[in-house]
Amino acid sequence: MYDASLLENPAEALPDAAVTVVGMGRSGMAAARLLQTLGARVTLVDQRTEAAIQAQEVLNLGRHVHVLTGARWFEGLLYSQLVIISPGVPSQLEPIARVRARGVPVVSEIELASWFLTVPLIAVTGTNGKSTVASLIGAILEHSGVQPFVGGNLGTPLSEAVLMERQRPTGPRFDCVVAEVSSFQLENVYRFHPHIAVMLNLTPDHLDRYASFAEYQAAKERIFSHQGPYDLAVLNADDPLVAAMSRLCRGTILTVSLAQQVPWGVSVSKGMVTARFGGQPFALFPAEDVPLLGQHNLANVLAATAVGLACGVPGDRVGQAIRSFRGLDHALEHVRERGGVMFVNDSKGTNIDATLRALESFRQPIVLILGGK
Image 1 (cartoon, rainbow, N blue to C red):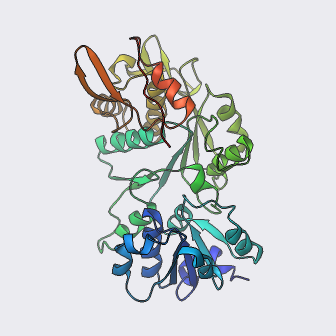
Image 2: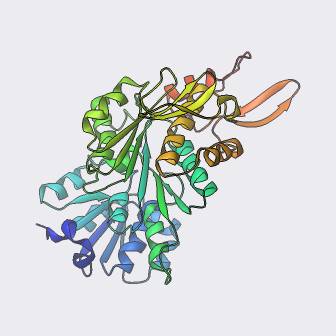
């Protein structure tokens, strides 16, 4: 059995606790570094036999970190008081299930990091558009003079943000954290508490990992589990499944819509991106100013705009940030034009709905190169 204080008061309980990190990818290594600074006895495990060789960072952690790889990786779980699971590791693995049966908590890297964040947390999820919206929110905040950390499933793990904060003697390096969070990361959260939670859309995805779409949806919905009355949720009113999640939200709800005017939130009216917070609507900027292709990206802009306004960013600053945003690599990325043909890289579109939204963004005849894993 485990010491309940590991979840209730981790700052005091983690020193000298036996903690196993499952998965030696980027988030697993960041979690191990954070745990080491907190004084935990860290074991790193990975079922890949080459993991320890590839992870040069393991050597930098020093001799006090125990490493197990290959067929015997699960032995690193035998005496754990707490398990940190990387997003690429399925929670249903038999060794993980056995650990849970012993009463040992299994939590995600974002859960671990959230225990030690000292700045407000904005979390963005949904099937598609997460990276774009998280990056847009970061750009909007920067335009208003706020210094955000943007990461999570997008790029830098949250544990790195905590490490950066703790290593800065003069106080926090960031004013807030903007995190893209996936269903894999949300599966194993228990106290993860975003002050602003954004749900963009929900369509079938990752059904090779989940037993059903309902199970996938339940993982996504955990983003709202620990919000309170003073927190904020941003929901896409045009997605019926997302709109129905209002039942889970304990705080203020803002909605965004391309199809209708919303009483509290952001929508499009007469070609203008428009906000309304109970009173009269007010125009922010022309929808045609959005430099990203596609209606789905306009919906992404509405969500990011709602967050920016909720954080107190003036509407003109929001518009400036949107106009200067050039999108992400591999997301409807314009590569070049040759012989009258436009080449577009949308390799971030890894599910059916994302591909359909991308195709709808063009009026020209399209040759689609599709495949891969």
